[in-house]
Each structure stands twice: as C-alpha cells, then as structure tokens.
Image 1 (tube, rainbow, N blue to C red):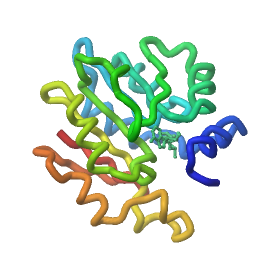
Image 2: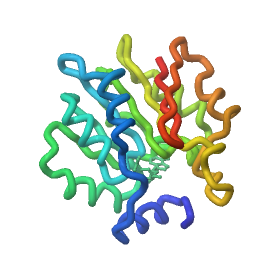
Image 3: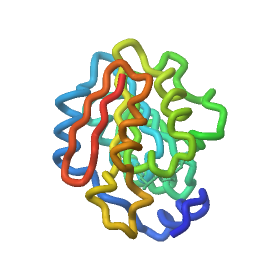
Image 4: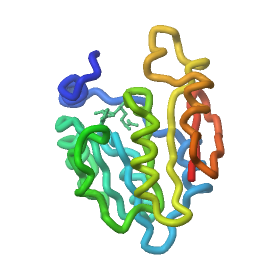
Length: 185
Ligand SMILES: C[S@@+](CC[C@H](N)C(=O)[O-])C[C@H]1O[C@@H](n2cnc3c(N)ncnc32)[C@H](O)[C@@H]1O
C-alpha cells in the first residue's frame, strides 16, 4: 500500500487493520500510565480506535485523532459504546491543532505511526507542549532489528529510537515482542 492520506483511508475502508493491541502493551500502559482523577488522553494516528477505546476503559476521557476518514468512520462505529471518546479528523503534522483540549493531556499516545511522520522531532515537541504537568507521551513503534527487511519502513532503528528521546527529561523504554514502548516526559 501507499502511505498518503487516501491510501490509509482506502486500507481501512477495505476492512483491513494493523497489528492488534497486545496484552503486554496493555499491561505496560496499565502499570505505567494509570488514569489519574479526571485524566485526559490524546491518542494520535488512532486508526480504527482500539487503543483509544482501551484508554477510555482505563478511565481516561480521550481525544482520538487520525487524518484518514476511513479510519474514523470505522472507529466511531466499532467503538460506539466507548464512553468519553471524541473522534477528530486531524493531520498531526500539518493541521492547526486548535481543536485539541486547551487544558492539555495527562497522556498522549502514538502507536505504529511515528515511522510515517516526516518531521518526528517537530511533531513530538508539538505534542509534548500539550502535556499537563507530570504527563507522559507514549510512543509505541516496531523495532527495525525485529522487522523483516521488506517492512523496514514501518519501523525505527536504534539511532532513530534514540533521537525520539531528545529534549525529554524522562525517557524510559520497554520492549515487548518486536515493539519498543517509549515513555517520554
Ligand atoms: C499503521 S497505522 C496505525 C493505526 C493505529 N495507531 C494502530 O495502532 O492500529 C498508522 C496510522 O497513522 C495515520 N497517520 C499517518 N500520518 C498521519 C498524520 N500526519 N496525521 C494523522 N494521522 C496520520 C494513518 O491514517 C493510520 O491510521
């Protein structure tokens, strides 16, 4: 598949998905970023919304954003029962982020998507600026060393992973199967 906005949309409209949220990922989130009272989360590049719905189940009020209409249509239908989730059509690299909660977020997540972002440092800085005090930015991404060569473009190598942590005071990493889970703050 291609990776333009329409390509993503058609992928979802065709009923296809990506790697499901794993039990180890869920356990890491539950342990390291439990929802505080009145916790708010932003899940960017949310796809069909599995992680957004999971965060809602942990007690977060969630803004979930993706730029693919085909993803958001399915997310709204497949997670219609998820309480406290707002679905937003947003290009995280190019759009004005004025629709996001001006009070900020305790948790911001981006899963299986950072490899497709062109200016990663800029996007991570922009997102980090939306964190509340003691908030955490979680990046979940395939690791190049555990990814077949033909799918290298969906993953980050060790230098690319290290670059994501630039400018953050807190940077923890947990590896689960072939994914790196970075906790930044
Ligand atoms: C591989 S999918 C992962 C979807 C979801 N996070 C998951 O874990 O299943 C990457 C997602 O990033 C979205 N995406 C890519 N670039 C984006 C951008 N600049 N702004 C918003 N969404 C973007 C795509 O539409 C797609 O839904």
